[in-house]
Amino acid sequence: MVSERDVRLTDGRLVRVHDTGGGDAPDALTLLWHHGSPQTGALLEPLVSAAGARGIRLLSYGRPSYGGSSPHPGRDVASAAADVGQILDALGIARIAVMGASGGGPHALACAALLPDRVMGAVCLAGLAPFTESFDWYAGMISDGGLRAAAAGRGARERYAASDDFDENSFTPADWAALKDTWASLGTDAVRANAAGPDGLIDDDLAFVAPWGFEVTRIDTPVLLVQGGQDRIVPPAHADWLVRNCRLSELWLRPRDGHISILGAIPVAMDWLRAQNELL
Image 1: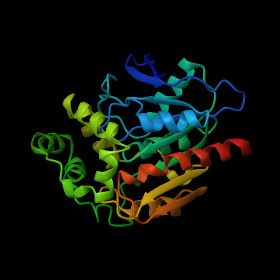
Image 2 (image 1 turned 135 degrees about the horizontal axis):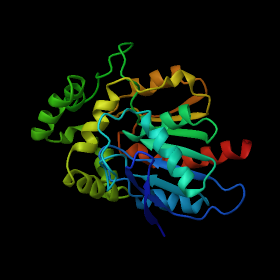
Image 3 (image 1 turned 60 degrees about the vertical axis):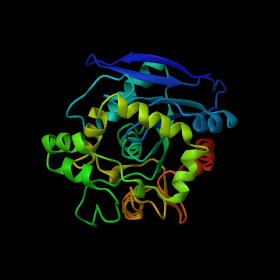
Image 4 (image 1 turned 90 degrees about the horizontal axis):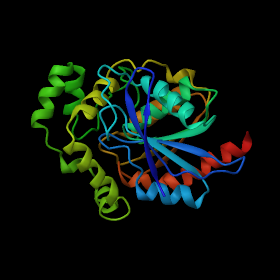
């Protein structure tokens, strides 16, 4: 069963935290999930089932302006690590692994970089690379309007949000099949997040195209990158850049997967994290 609580941070903000509990064995793994953009931060059934089958305690939280968490205008990607550190303190948890998909990927990397004594491993599925000119960052994105607008500033991104329509070609047939079956809960949760307003997504996009507040080259934690070869939202070039710049990283390229169907790799990615945990 998943419990829910609000944690008050030192700056007065509240973050809504979701927790499956369990993991009482001394060597049990606790995994913190970083949700995509837009999502509420609620734990989705496929995640809960996969973690439960492996004896993993699963946590998540809504980033600012998502799922009941307070706004934090001007946040950068690095700020997620400070929030997570306070969440762990509130829950009395010393050490975790992190996993994030899509917009959650950069925030998982932030925790790996900035909480080295508390994060023992990180998984990034279909996650963006830092905004850079070292490769064509937008190439291969079916719909890059939101990120391009964010690069022009908050006003431009807010104006874009007022008329933004999702391009269904952003998802592959495999993605749509996943949303109709195993990951139907993700689609439902995204609708719920969108209904609450665009602020969380706007702040995410602004953070992605600005300096992240840390260098991925400084990450000393093992990192697993999982990428779909047919991803039309975060193209494979992002994972290629990350694996070349994260020192302790490896890449699982799944040539037939898109942006949603890549989530089918989560159970084996959890196994990878458990193996890393056993090496400690």
